[in-house]
Image (cartoon, rainbow, N blue to C red; front, side):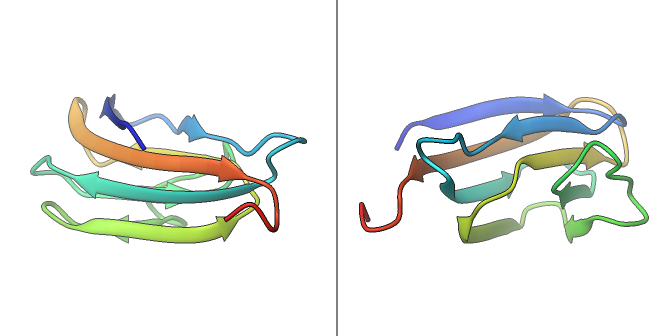
Amino acid sequence: MPTTSRSIGTTAEQVAAPSKTKPLLDIVIQNLSTNTVYVGSDSGLTIANGIEVLAGREWFDDQRSEPVFLIATDAASDVRMQYVAYEAGER
């Protein structure tokens, strides 16, 4: 599972999505910035309605079947991600 580095800002950004052929998704998000990052499942994500990932912390979810969006409290927030998409029974 390769690691992806992203610079997340103050606008919700899609970072991962399951497909029709691989509908399940395991994902790890690590917030390496000094800002707080928030996780959600649609483009309506805001800092008021997302799951909080504090600076220096991680967030993990498995068997997620929704897109993953991130937003941060400030620009250029360093986030690392690892994810794998798969079908039920492949894991």
